Structures are given as C-alpha cells and as structure tokens.
Length: 253
Ligand SMILES: [Zn+2]
Ligand SMILES: [Zn+2]
Image 1: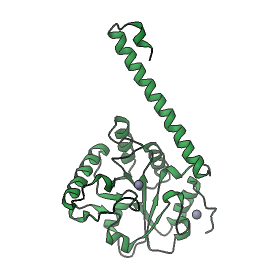
Image 2 (image 1 turned 135 degrees about the horizontal axis):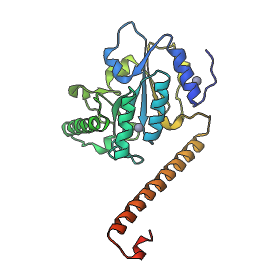
Image 3 (image 1 turned 90 degrees about the horizontal axis):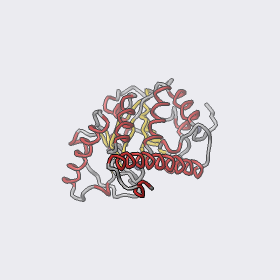
C-alpha cells in the first residue's frame, strides 16, 4: 500500500492499522512469548524529551487499540520522573495498558560490570515504584554516543532491546533524529516476520512540521509549564508570608 510518508499521527496509525492485518502488534515484552509462526511488530518509544508528549502518544495509541513500551529515563536533562507530576504521568501511561521500560544511560553506570548490574536492578525497582507496574524491559539511551556497556541483563530476567536474541530475530527500525535510516516504517511492513519499531514521541504530531518547528514548539510548551510552576511557587510563598505576618517588602516576588 502506498501512503504519503510524514511524521503525522495519521501516517503512524494508518501504517499500524494496515500492518495489523498480518501482524500481532504490541509492546516489547511480547517478544518473550513470541510464537514461531506468528508475525510480530514490537512497538517502542524512547522518552528522551517529554513525559507530556509520551502521555499524548500513549492516549492516542490506546484510543486506536494499540499498546506499546515507553522507555523512561531516570536521568533526563528535560524531565523528572521522580517529581510528583512525573510519577502521575508515568503511572497514567501504565494504567492505559502500556508497558513501562527502563531507558538506561550508561554514563550513569559504573564501569565495573557487576556494579552496573546492581545499579540497573536498583533503577528498575525505582521505576516499578514510580510507574506502579512491573518492569521487565530495558533499552540503552543513545548507544551511539554513550559507552555501550554490554550488560547481560538476562541474568536479571530483564529483556534488553540490545540483546543478541532480539536483534538476531527481529528487524529493527528507528526514527532517531527524526530520520528513518532505511525508509519510513510503512515501507518495511510485510518484508519481515518480526519488526521492532522505535519512535520518539517528540517527533510525531497532528500536523506535518519541520524538525525545527517541532523543537520550537517543545521549548514553548516547556516555558509555559515553567512559568506556571513558578506561579504556583509564588502563591505558596505568599501564603506562607501572610501566615508569618512578614513585612510588606518581602511580598514583592
Ligand atoms: Zn511511510
Ligand atoms: Zn534515548
């Protein structure tokens, strides 16, 4: 089938709906129950920028009847999974029927393999608490830029998306940097029995936009959020100063 290829949610879902005729489509953890004669698509999102974008993707997938894996960073420069709001959003994604996985950053791990395994295990326990769900899948963050420590997560009963077995059996495509290396996701449907599709929620939108516009919009949304958070903080300080009968000049915040 010939589609108009872009990074709109329309193209994302028309591709999946077309693929659904011959593939089982679901989260990465489904790899563990993969049947021999089945065709599978493992849907995965690396949440590199924004939990809000991830939630929007999760809601729209749920509306279309799909579930996938959202890999969450614990050490992001852009969002905080440990915050009250972060925890709420991640649990909400899990409650929509999606899998939550650990997006580990090797820069945060010890070079000692044994220690790094313990650190991953601890991060998984933390993410299980944050997401109120069972975490059994992990994926490295920008393996091309960070040290690609080969950690055997099988010993921890964790499915690593960089593990030999999944890479051997499953054709892998990614929209990293909003660029499909070997052609759009739709062009691979039907060519392979098993496909792992990695998309980043930041790149997908209702309307077709340039990568620059998409990032500018992200900056705009984050600024609005920051202004609102500072507004909440100011209100809290004003309440406190009122209670303390602080001098008038202290209210000028
Ligand atoms: Zn396409
Ligand atoms: Zn990443």
